Image (cartoon, rainbow, N blue to C red):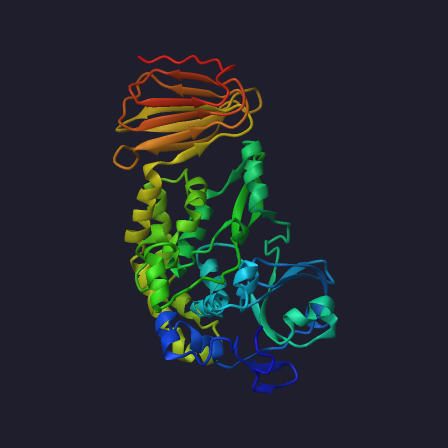
Length: 464
């Protein structure tokens, strides 16, 4: 647990306190092996407000506790009915370890590795997110006193530093959805869709700040409605691993082998395939409609909108006591990473485009592959009176970028159609799901069909 006697000075509404004292006084050997990291940032006393559960924002009630394997979290509700999240800045590695490794040297070393996290990184993200047109929660940092109002959670949060942020930061205060719910809704009906261009903005921002921990639980989703379609837009949250960086031998070794995503927040945004190793499958699904032109345009917009002024403003959200010795370094890295993002992000695009996957829905889908100059076009629509000719997916593919395309139907009696004029070196993998699927392949293109319901499928497959 974090030291309870870590503050130097307390006033009525504020206190001067470090984010944590656990990473201080490291030996030379530990600094070499684990790294110097952000130890100075963690241990520098900063002046922050004191959080009073019954007074802040008119008073909060505790709704639920939660958090991941390392972060302590409380869901709060204010008197207006708005939900908030209070989460610890420092992480407790013990909960993520199997019992046999707790209270051992392994736990000690793993806890010390948390010094590679910048304790105040989350404060800088809202300014950057606004710059690229993203909606994101705005965290506020507080010191949590030993407050009886916390009840059964008192011992966990007493004398710790935490972030407080809105759980539903949508412009209209509408409720958001989890990633699991959104993916299920998109799979169920074609009238539910993801705003992939907004998602690309969010992922480019992740790459800019070196945030590798962007799994499904790190997102909430807002909704926009237009012409009978529900469009989901991303709301990134939990920015604990922005600017993650270690100069220790352990992380340097691990990042080359078992933990490639821990390559760190360096001056160049190179090696994005490694940085994004934990979210490759999500990127392949969330960005599969976007072309090189879409990526090029989005990167240029980020480079324009994340100006030097925006970067300076964002990083100055770090407490002044810490900015004084570490702020300029982050500013310099952000500017260099921004300037070189086109080269490195487009390499990542090329990787994602090599073997893309296109998904259908539980409805009846028609997948049509047609010729398009030097490439092929893939279009998906639903037949029927209400949805006839309503295209739900379309993208052009070129052999110079794409080698294979996987097209996966889910439910319904799907149709896979390859037009006769199609001729390409790109290989097609057509995968039918539940339902009586129909295949018509007439072009000159290598095609493999894998129908999970072959016994009842109307396999009308011809090669000409």
